[in-house]
Image 1 (cartoon, rainbow, N blue to C red):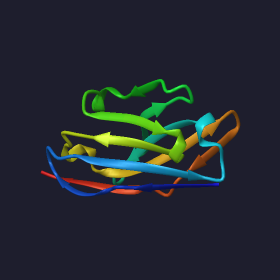
Image 2 (tube, rainbow, N blue to C red):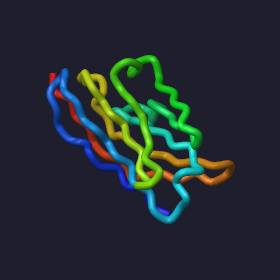
Image 3 (cartoon, rainbow, N blue to C red):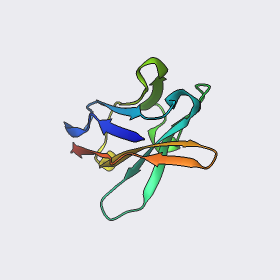
Length: 114
């Protein structure tokens, strides 16, 4: 099983990025998928969730700016990030879970310059 995040990079405040989480080795469509982020020196926090039925939830700090979506045909989940702020700077991790099964990617770094 492998989750691979991509799409991170350096962007100016107010800019946009789209992160991708591509899965292999699992039937991705039956998993709930989460995006977490971990800022330097801080704990990892949940940012967004999409269930296997497509329901989404985002934390208040990113509502209206971030969108989570999935393309089951491509075994990929996306995190569209707009109006980025310096405080969005973090390593973003993809997580897939189903019952007791829990998988993580290695993360992709997003740096927002102010």
